[in-house]
Image (cartoon, rainbow, N blue to C red; front, side):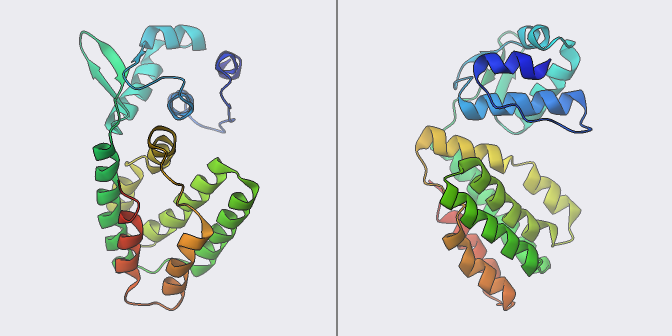
Length: 213
């Protein structure tokens, strides 16, 4: 059902395995934001989406609430949900918070060098193929390994709550930001973690902030 509906908008539909209906709807809405299906300021009609997808409004409402928590949409009692008008300040704030979280994570634990090497290799392959989505995905996986290795579940939860993959795609589409999730940018970090350099946390922070608007 979801695949047939969203195919009308020429959106890539990825199968979701063993995920709640709400998560599947959320993923489809996120794909719509990334692809430009809904422009900043445009209204997202809950009832219309529920009707198009053949579901009740409850899971759609839950998915929209999650996107609101990520600051991707905004809602009001009288006007409903709309796509937020994203600004460079929004993006800069995300990078600033992300930089602090990842620097802290790097001080708390040591990530798996093997995982970082694998992510860096994926970055190189994706860049060579010109696969934008794969580059973003591999870059996020690289940094997630660092945060997860901290052993701090709350820190990881806050980091994941930033919605970094979505914000990265939006920054590229809306602000013509250069994609920095590439192998060349990550090799110095990989070497620093491999040698357990005490400079690794500061390097990681500088790496992230260097791409903030």
